[in-house]
Amino acid sequence: MFEPQGSGFFLLLIVVFGGLLIWVALARQLVFRVLAACLAFLPAMVFGVAAVNKFYDYYQTWGGMINDLTGQGSIPKYAAAGTGTNKQFDKNIGRVTSQAEDAQVGYLFQTSVTGVRSHLTRDVYVYLPPQYFQKPFRHYKFPVIELLHGSPGYPQAWVDVMGVIPTFLSLLETHPKDAAVLVMPDTDGGVRYGLQCLNDPGGIQDMTFVARDVPEAIARIARVQPPGRAWGVAGYSEGGYCAANIALQDPNGYGAAGVLSGYFAPLRSQVPAGNKPGGRPLGVNVFLGHPGLKLLNTPQAYVTRVPINEFLPAFWLAAGAEDKSDVIAAENFRQLLQTRLANVPFMMVPNGRHQGSVWRAALGPMLSWMTPQLAQQAVRADAAAARVAAARMAHHGKPRSPHVATATKKP
Image 1 (tube, rainbow, N blue to C red):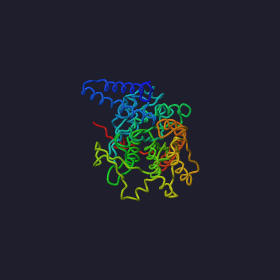
Image 2 (image 1 turned 135 degrees about the vertical axis):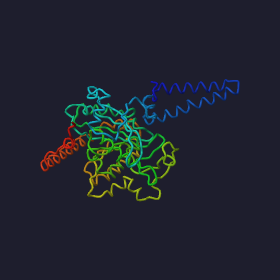
Image 3 (image 1 turned 120 degrees about the vertical axis):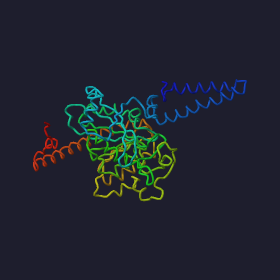
Image 4 (image 1 turned 120 degrees about the horizontal axis):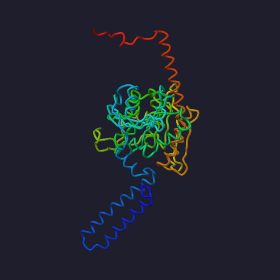
């Protein structure tokens, strides 16, 4: 009742605002009237913010709002992203958590990735599904879905606002073989910015971080498929644009893309002044003077120019039925995609606008559509790798370990 969208919370704000107005009217001393008038702005301002939150149906709990806006929570940290091996990672995780519990509900952790190419350092949230800890999947390299948040937002919004983990667990109850690792990177570097996963010609290389650095770092440590068709990318709002743009530009890095209320042409970006983390946000057109780059980063235009001999990832689209601009944009993009793809699912959520309830409603169907495809790609990739390994063994014979060959017995 008193959560951010609760009627009790709105009623409390009205009562407080009304009480302060009465104080303004009845106070005899000027200083108290001015104080009451100033204080009345607070509940009025909070009411406005709460009304916007209710309209977009975003934050439903205070905890979710605080965790998302601060990027903090009780999620454990793993400090070795980008180093070590898959086996070492699995051992490290096993030391700090309960394998029996993880085999039932999975394991969520956060880590920090420093991009080899982009030189950006940001937090990334990773969810390992229950199957990651189960014996039948002990040697299985999992497919991956990279989930991109909107703006303003943090990757933890997928957990606190979107509820991706219970949604995914519900799916895996009936389709355990479709398990995938979920990777949720910080795409903007802070809630004040909206970088749209773009490579700024004169600044931050955001797409490089999201589409290259993060997949490569996660693949180095976790037991997952290398970047390729066993990877999917999905996002809502700004993250939906990111997913569409990245999937078209990097068709060898992803096999499927989910776009929830996304747009298909870049907007003005909110970038930090001087391209330095923490700088004040500036609204800029990062492609000003670069028409070729703007075309490349406009999915609704570039989709018709993707070379015919290039693989095109599968696409899944969703929009709130009451948001006409979102619906028209998705329908137009779908028509363009269907010149290359036989089937492009499009889900319209009834009575929905550009809001959280739409993205939560679409999340389950999108995962149900994407995970089987990625699982099939993972099986094919493992089979291909096994054939290559067998061919090498047959041709060269079993290689001797360099440690055995060079070892000497001490006197």
